Length: 460
Image (cartoon, one colour):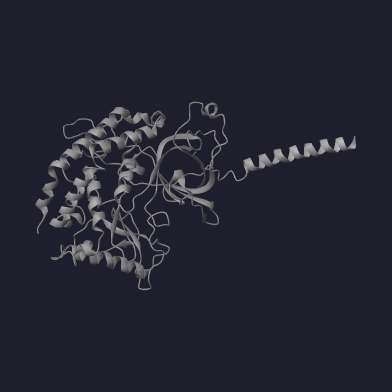
């Protein structure tokens, strides 16, 4: 009898330990759940709110988000294979800081734009690198909310194309955003232009002489710190202002600042010299020419009127050359708020540096050869239209959910009228996509027929 009782007792202890162990393993470190969700009843959990996109949920803890001052929030990420729902267990729950971003978008758009950074511990300033939605791990991210672009896809379309052409361009992923449990619509998580192991990845150290890797930005006068006063500005060749983005203000030394200013000035002085087109001692000695060619073509294709003027970024590694990357195609393909952009013109002919570069026949040769090559591949009609259709397919039902919140924009005139006084705003999502496709087709037809016109600007 005693043996039987002891046997039963041991059996109950074993079952209890097994159940406790299963519970413990299922709940350990929920903050970094990267496997498949323990959500077996997915259809029941969806309640018509399932999405094939990842989900980000922001809890502001009653903090007021500001443009200039970062506030601490909590971020939850739901990103599983297949469908996602806000009822699922998050893959990640982490502290973060947040602030509003943007210039004209901050002033005029109803849909907020954000910059966030993940932290293990905000008070101890311990950052948390995380592979957000499958992108390379980092702590710093831009959350772009398409508002003026009612196709939702312009930035993603051009960033993905740029990544295939350039040495480095921002990666991006769609997701759906909730702030304090209120649905905000479709957003695009974007890698900001920055240095890091999984970003531009410049050399970590400079030299005692002040020589250093750097990232520079050109933007509106009065909007930046660590402004450079280079040869181009001092002699009236360039507009707006260049500034140092990396090294950051906390680490940029006077020697490094002076070296960067001198380095850019050397290139500009040669660019505006009589021997600018010399293949050995001219501008080609200082710049990554292929990146300048691709930057020119990407922005011409997208009809960006302020390329190389605003939101313009370049970087240079130790012993490297000045290299372009891209940023912000929200206004591309005739989507500027304030003016109609005809598809049958060039946009970079009088912009900083390119006004001089196209005076070199060799540079124009490279542009035309590259364009002809791209038209057979990445910029072919079929390729571009397929890209657009795939972006729309990827968004899926999230498009309708987004415009449940922002659908009133189809009834507003957010864009100025065209030269004939006709409304440029789409009346529906389908019309927005049709307008984008039509503009792209007309743009490519113009470029096909007029690329040789660039030779008219050559002086050699």
